[in-house]
Length: 272
Image (cartoon, rainbow, N blue to C red; front, side, top):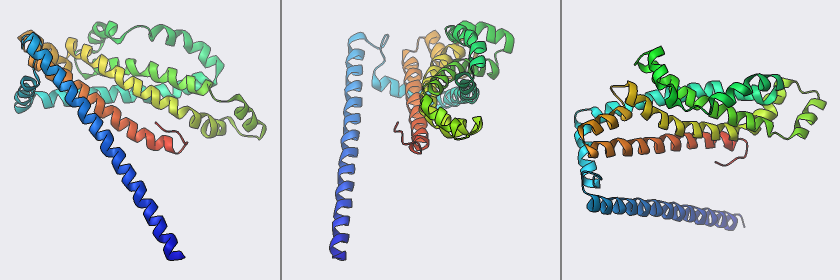
């Protein structure tokens, strides 16, 4: 009987593995077909409008090799990635605790709400000139603009998560003698983690929007600077390289964030 049960278990495990493999292959196949269809449409548009308006996939690939050979593309990727990660990381580090305070403490919410509601509607690009005047054309101006982009998004999502916590859970914990710190760590924070992750992902996407405008105005190296310089030289193929690189970089950053966040959320039974 033991041998039969072990064999049945092994067979069930094999079947699950096969089903998982089939699903993985199917997903990969859909992704590949989607990419091929996109490249095909891109090629048709390039054939219709010509290289002066739309660079073809082959021309873009050749331009990417050209920019990579002299280090321009690599340096641009490193510079933009560094600015995004530092500014976004600072935005998350500041936005999460501020959001927790805003969501939990009414007085803090009343004090900060007018400023949050005022500044979050002013786009970062409006502050580009001031950032350059105040902080110069160095790294600080770009990092501060990305921080400005990220911090309000993370704060709002975190505070929304705190205020969405079931009130009955908070009352039950308080009636059992839990301190404010215990309630925060045991109930509020676990319930708010999905909102924090969502805010971090949205902030990451908006950071990519900000980095282009910031680098166009005040940077010699970076993907935004590459796109602007390419435009000045009339190199549409270089512009396409910069745009596509931004998209790929954003996809990779978001994918890594999702993988890391999914492991954190798994502890709380939440899927991303």
